[in-house]
Length: 217
Image (cartoon, rainbow, N blue to C red; front, side, top):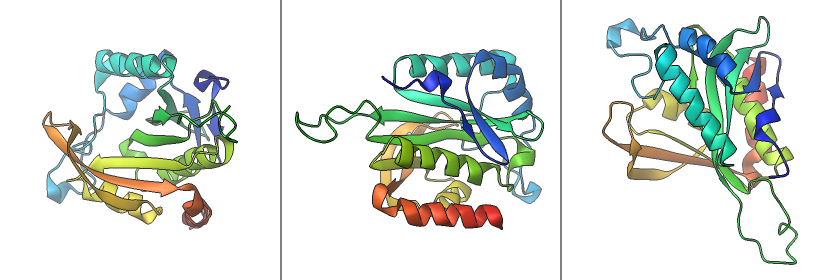
């Protein structure tokens, strides 16, 4: 790769996305410590549908795996850091980075940046949910994917049972493509059916405007 995921930092007004490293383990473990539901009446874990690491040992393994993916050139993982005070409030990543086999002579043949990717493994500490943190993180990542990498497509998947996540993806302009059956291991260790969404390059200007408006609101 001519670009380095290890040095890729994306900065906004509310959050900064730093390349994930072992220095973030303690902050991530603290961020995931509160698992109480947003709506206590539902009696569900906040991270019911998300594979979120808990405790120092599990978080260390989580970060080491993400770094291994980065070293293999298949992911760019981040710690989500609150811009105001530098506190780690969650994590996210680009992964499934695809470089298509463009024929020699094609304008994209010499590219080393991804042609398509997925955004996922996104989670936030409880106090950062329903703030501008996730909206700005998505704006930063999608801007980088479509404007710096010149990607043609960004995918997002979520557990088909996760209605809150599905609604959030649709609100930012993700187009529902269908359900992938037994797609991945779920957070509750069963074969997970995934709701698949995507944003393509032609849709990016509208999605960008929608994200900016949501931040302003």
